[in-house]
Image (cartoon, rainbow, N blue to C red):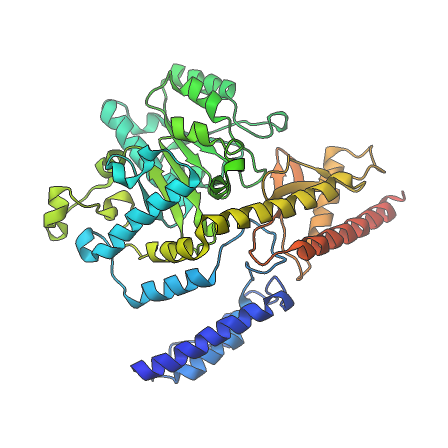
Length: 491
């Protein structure tokens, strides 16, 4: 492909992307293909000779788009949102046009310097303490792939710090703390690093939040047993329930265990800190006072295309002490002098993508007000949804609504005698009906043995009529489930 062919193909690609988004509302939310569809449609091996690019571009439309679940669809309410903006798409396009491995400042100075700048911009708009800014040259921020990577890196740094301070402690004695509501990232970090993981119990009575008393009991038990808890992954806005761990209580206990690293995972809810009115609920004062590291994903609820996970640390030296491997061929004058950041020592890989460009594009084109408006719009839509659930005779909450997340279940007032097991069976049947539909995407979860359904609002194109329609669909399927249940049991 020469430059003029690229120009024509690029024009067509932009046109087709625009057409895709124009038609998005009319498409099914979920892909309708069957497993293995693509292998059946494509040749068994790569072509021996070059193919015309127009054919390739057309095959994308023919074979790939039908196999996509449309996460930006206005009726996508599953999992958590995955951000996509046109500004972000263009940022990715520009970044991919100047590929470089970005392993140190010299590899492309703009890549390192723009990342340091936009990480400080995002820290500022979230209200993070200045100790997390790159300009301090003590703490700082770095773009990671996902919150799982951020948690893994924080765990590596915490382990390195602990072993450095306690050189005679055997690795098998170390313990990583999560809760029973923590995302799988905590357990995965333990698997990767060969660490014991203890999930501390949280209860519905405490809104599924970790309390200081629970942590205190666990620490005493493990220390008395000769174990060494060295990191706690706390959460602001858990996946299943939107729970917010009580960081103040946690800190009151942790001060007696000074080598317990506090990593705060706010992968979804953290972006809400851009709105001052949500900062207390999201425990910003406690984050700023106590967290050793903090993570939020702008690629979830933050308008920046995947991948865009932000990790801030209060002391960058803990990262570099754990991860700095600098062979001779990676040395540079500025790196040796310590006058620049070499981000390869802030994550597990060597090379890294030019992700800061899309941050720069989106932050500038939307402005702080644009982010605030988007977050508050989503939260208001969820408040409307939650109010309709609250008023319903069919449904009840399984957890307290938080920001743009509502967790609910069928709990008909007409059937007050149903046991938890019966209600779970009823709700599994209800969810199966929802999951079978192609015009809405919504996910299920389990809260301490209670099966329920999650409604997460976040697609930028979602408006009030989409939430109204979701309520109609949910009500319709709920009534159908109840009729079937009553027929089955002769009620």
